[in-house]
Amino acid sequence: MNSMAKVKTPVKPTGKKKGKGSPEGSPPEEEAPVEEPAHDKDSVVAHKMASEQREISVSEFFTKNRHLLGFDNPRKALLTTVKEAVDNSLDACEEAGVLPDVEVTIRPVEGNAERFRVIVEDNGPGIVKQQIPQIFAKLLYGSKFHRLRMSRGQQGIGISAAGMYGQLTTGQPVRITSRISSRKPAHYYEVVINTHKNEPDILKEEAVEWDKPRGTRVELVIEGKYQRGRLSVDDYLEQTAIANPHVEVLYEAPDGEKFKYPRAAKDLPTPPKEIKPHPYGVELGTLIKMLRGTSSRRVSGCLASDFSRVSPRVAAEICRGAGLDVTTSPKKVAVAEADRLLTAIRGTKIMAPSTDCLSPIGEDLIRKGLSRQIDAAFQCAVSRSPAVYRGNPFAIEAGIAFGGKLSPDGDKKPEQEATAPPKDKENEPEAVKLLRFANRVPLLYQPGACAITKAVVSIDWRSYGLQQPRGSLPLGPAVIFVHMASVWVPFTSESKEAVAHYPEILKEIKLALQECGRQLSMFINRRRRMAEEFKKRSYIEKYIPQLVIGLRDILGFSEADAKRCTKNLQAILEKTRGELDTSILGKKGAGTRNGE
Ligand SMILES: Nc1ncnc2c1ncn2[C@@H]1O[C@H](COP(=O)(O)OP(=O)(O)O)[C@@H](O)[C@H]1O
Ligand SMILES: [Mg+2]
Image (cartoon, rainbow, N blue to C red):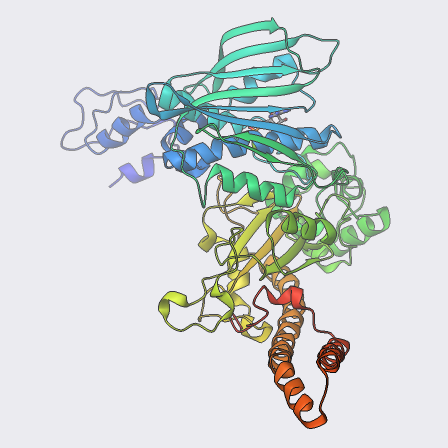
């Protein structure tokens, strides 16, 4: 058909197509208006679709897809809301160099068992008045997305999403009180999000009295469900305290019970520095965007000033490798040239990224955090030196708490017969409790999708003294702690629940865990030796009275001699105690077999 040749550009339809159904009297001119009604039978559907095609606002998108942000069921929504607010408070306090004091209150809404009032208050820097509406009622608005620095939030879609969820499920606005200085008044706002435009609507705004010199208080009313135990707000706060020993949290649960997670470390973590992207991790599209947006006039200048670890000498070397003159204007670099630059970057030796952008917890504080929440017989921690994935520095830390009062589900229950060999299914030890953290935030959901779980499962724990069913977590009374600190944690979704499976990350997690595993197996072996020694000693101790009776008969001891003899024999037994340390054996002093 000749109509094929006529269609040159989609915006200027040539209009007339002869044949059945073609509009009579349709003008033969080439310049038909774009809005021309779809009379052409073939294009009817396309025109109908065109009438329905329009921009989708990010808020509308996430209203429909709120599961992507962690609001897929009421119980999880309550946790996500608390988590977004607390994570922001901790980020803000640390950025301001303040030891965080955070109060979390959850109250049931009277007359509606499915609604909760969530209040999170901090002693952070506060928020500048004009920014308050945007922060709490505009998705994708924040201070962390465009920088490369370790922080809990990164997307700018945390607290605003919680606000939107509250609005959607209860019709209530987000209520914010914030103050940035004792010399300035506090400001109170009530805001809702206009999901059509992804813009805030201010319902109320006023200066108020507030007894706090500085800080922020966020109040949301949401549909939720409160339930204690695994995956609960309580669980999240408890794990937050483990990974953030410098934080103090006061928590009032919906049933009125109050909890205090006191500060275990007096110092703030070293503030992480902001860095520029490392050239090894950059992708072609990003490189082109950076070349177009740079303020440098030369390619070499752009490479040296917009990337980390690129000196003018290295920049010149990269240009040489790409066959580009160093003086070329970055804005004029063609796509093919940028591609050559990328190849040259990968072939040039460039120093690893600096690591002062990370603030790992550290081995001491991991042990401290673990021992504060978990009463274990053994603890170890390993903090690896930083590595790089896709140009982003990251550091892995791991820890293990084992035995003691630690029950298989990780609570502070007395040690069960956990140390006896399993007799039947019921007595079989349970899987260890795995605590996953990213930038000090506990990850509670989607363990199966997370690189951390994958790394733990892929290790042969039997060689470290733990049982392990094939392809599963190891068994035994233990808690395994893994923390990934990075300037950009590669989460598998916006709800930030699981770390993506980058090989570099998996490798580092495994190395950290293997080191912990070696320390654990030394402990388990020592405990086994001691258990055996303890058993033998118990036999001897038991037979000392019999021995003394025998000696008394043979040698004719007096009562006093017999007593002295008993004492001496006990003293000899005590002297030869060697390395026996019953404190690590538990109160029965026996059994190391569980989980071995
Ligand atoms: N309690 C707070 N104190 C100070 N600033 C805050 C607080 N909560 C949020 N902010 C600011 O609001 C921004 C948006 O927060 P959020 O929507 O949770 O996104 P993100 O934390 O990913 O940046 C943050 O980047 C921060 O600048
Ligand atoms: Mg946030």
